[in-house]
Image 1 (spheres, protein in one colour):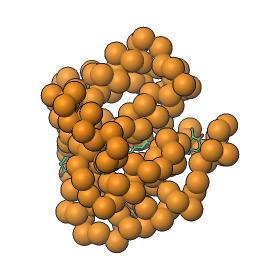
Image 2: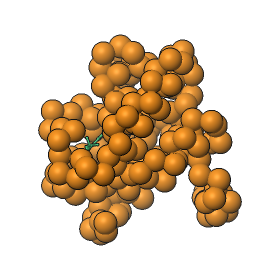
Image 3: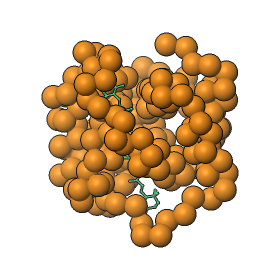
Image 4: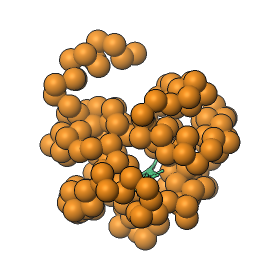
Length: 164
Ligand code: 45D
């Protein structure tokens, strides 16, 4: 799937944020659109719920601190067992993992946002622009965001030389 230029600029802006900011923006995105996400969405046939739940359950069993570390590891392509498992999933299944994590934050099984957390202004701007995309553009953007996360040993060497 190709994204529009606007979405592509946004993808780069998002990926340019610090790791914690990416997590925070992604959280606020979820709080904005949570109700409109439904596992029965078109394309749901390409998702593997059992596999997403299997990975989610392993994350859920970690301590809150480890849960946060793992999410940071996913965003920053750090090599961990669970990052490798994540990288092996299809893009839509990856989306579902993040969705389950966000729901877990809502119901207290995953480390919540710190009380009174406020986004720095550059992150706030990225969030505002994401909110202005059409729904299908948002979904495409999120796929592009979650797709390169995790640790894929076959592409890691390429990424580490092109990153910075
Ligand atoms: O202490 O086709 C900070 C499916 C600061 C169905 C922090 C779908 C320090 C099939 C780092 C901020 C449903 C899959 C703490 C489609 C600090 C299908 C913590 C669509 C504690 C299309 C921050 C799915 C943390 C979609 C822990 C659209 C942040 C899914 C965590 C969208 C943030 C999912 C998380 C989204 C954000 C999930 C977990 C937007 C998750 C967002």
